[in-house]
Image (cartoon, rainbow, N blue to C red; front, top):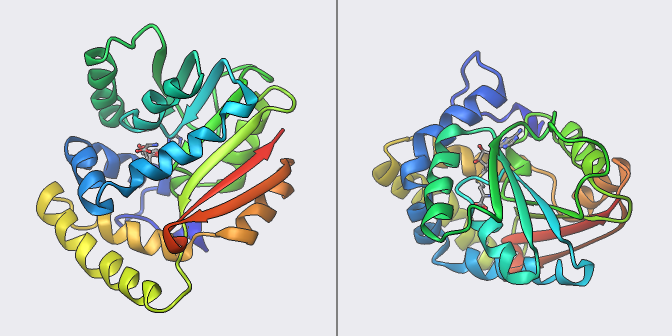
Length: 241
Ligand SMILES: C[S@@+](CC[C@H](N)C(=O)[O-])C[C@H]1O[C@@H](n2cnc3c(N)ncnc32)[C@H](O)[C@@H]1O
């Protein structure tokens, strides 16, 4: 069901639509992220990356890296080197400017690629991360499998993704904010009226909590754990190869 939710409901595949959408909104992506999450996404990212420390991963694969925020932040948590992959050339181009301005070119390599067909040998990386990316995969399971393939045995995959708050009144307030305010602000700032409606719809349809943990287990991940942040607006999942 979730993979039927697309940004533009056109004849193009979900992958093509997602790539076009992120190419369109790339110039305003970072600004909208900070505005719409009121900066809370930075706390989710930091908290998630703290969990990487125990694995002391030297080389991390950041899948669906977008403009590189997660890749850049990972370097503060003991990571030496990041290979960052994304479908969208425009998101990567924004990311490269950021990486360059911080003098991090020797530590972060940004390459265009698809999570479902990663161009790396088996057992390459010490850890993998996907922040707010798995919901956009055309085939979630295929993406999770290919990420597992390129991880070294025992290496963790860490996923941050939106989830759905369950408790009154956060559930109702969040629904209103996400369904009405975000698309409005998103349209005004990015000029893409559909992108932030897709954000709401894709979050509603996407597997979360126990269901997402089960999917990770089915794709071969072990010791799967999850937790939510901020009344259940966001979830962190960790599984090991
Ligand atoms: C919401 S952005 C997240 C970007 C970044 N990780 C962050 O935390 O800000 C989702 C990204 O997933 C990328 N994406 C979607 N499907 C993908 C796929 N199959 N392979 C690689 N990247 C993909 C999009 O191009 C987009 O840049």
